[in-house]
Image (cartoon, rainbow, N blue to C red; front, side, top):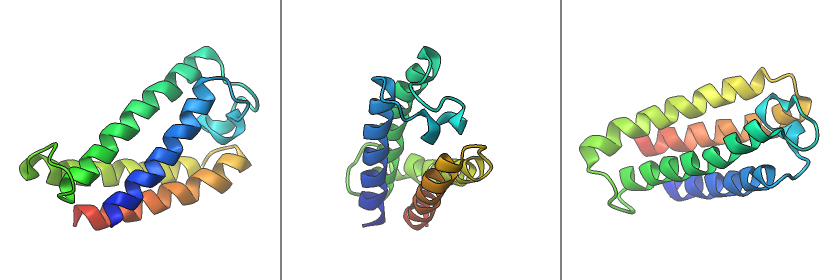
Length: 122
């Protein structure tokens, strides 16, 4: 169940990143909140790349949990710990963001993802 929840949160974040990449004026919630409205092209490209990264992270979590067989367990096990570390780092980065909106929304999401990843990795 933690892997499915983690994947669901990542899917929701992917929708958010797709919106950013398409020009939604939500920049205050992402990328340090440096651009309150529409993101510049380079960050919009970064948002599009994030969607691919989220799919990979979800695949690792689902594979480690045995829900799908994308990776052998010898690969999925350490990869899940790397994903956990990535989410912990994300929580820290969101916590120190200068954007109050990003801190308020993305920090709790990153913490939830880290806890779910920990449960899957264990």
